[in-house]
Amino acid sequence: MLEPRLKPPASGDHVSVARLNTWWYVACAARDLSDKPMPVRILGIPMVLFRDSAGRAAALLDRCPHRNVPLSLGRVSNDGRLECVYHGWRFDGAGRCTHVPALCNDRNPDARRVEAFPTREQDGLIWVLPNAAGEASAEPFALPLTQAPGYATVIREVSVEGTLHAAVENALDVPHTAFLHGGLFRTSTARNRIQAVVRRWHDRVEAQYIGEPRPSGLVARLISPSGGEVLHWDRFFLPSVAQVEYRIGEENHFLVTTAMTPVSDFQTRMFAVISFKLRVPARLVLPVLEPLAMRIFKQDAEILAAQTATIREFGGEAFLSTEIDILGAHIWRLLKRAEQGTLEAPRDQPEVEREVTLEV
Image 1: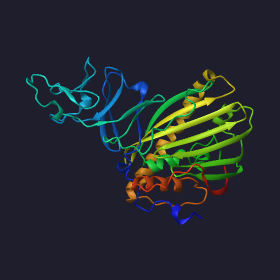
Image 2: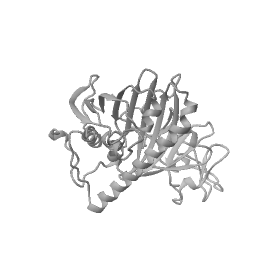
Image 3: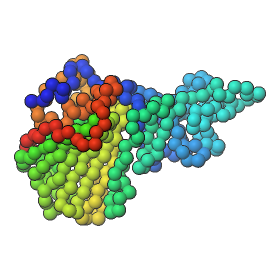
């Protein structure tokens, strides 16, 4: 049975993502931010992204202070300023208005500003802190292996109708893979009894799965044709990073790090960074592996949308959990503590929370 402090959320309760505004979130892939303004929404805040004259990413509130027109409808001028489509007001990356056409004797330019948000370009992603004051609980999550020798990396984005908690739990939920993704990785017929060890820190939780032979699904056979035992970890890092790691044999290593950006309480964007090293050259595997991965993401998006529609129809969430729902309650606890500002003190060594036996 779950301990009382790890009980799942009560009916109708959910994490208010607006309160998680001291953490960094992915706004877009760096390659997708060009010389055109890009509208995004993070924690319900409408923003516009653009690159200034030096190529630096900037994020402003998507509202011109002059007449409330979305700045994302404008353009980036030759001097790297964001120009409003309505009257041509221009703003730099810090949100300062640098030019008002036809205005002579500009005596108070600092009074005309747009709220600006800190940005960071890192690991092929544009991160934004949805807190104009710059108050951050931690640095942006550092993606491993994106520059490691011998590894190939691809970045893909999927939008889902679902809460942050639901999207993260789905990404780290082992039992559903044999049914929703049946035949792609695991199957509902070939079952193996394995152990899971749960470890937690003040800002993350990890499940290590022990004793699983290579699953019989198509993706697993593609990753390791010769079989072998799977070394498998699922991890959650505050505020919104889900990570799945597989090692099969000495030559096959597969790491999926998904940075999730809450658009609102019930909509989430998922930026999946897939880094892998296989015995087979990446150029031969990618044409097959990528469509399969996108098929899995699509199946997850469809089930999350159905789940969200049901929650709304019944007026709230209701959960009936067992001990094989291994990480969901831990994720919920961490999110609620982050929302309430009551995180535990940092510690270097994890606490071994419990061990669970399950069949997959």
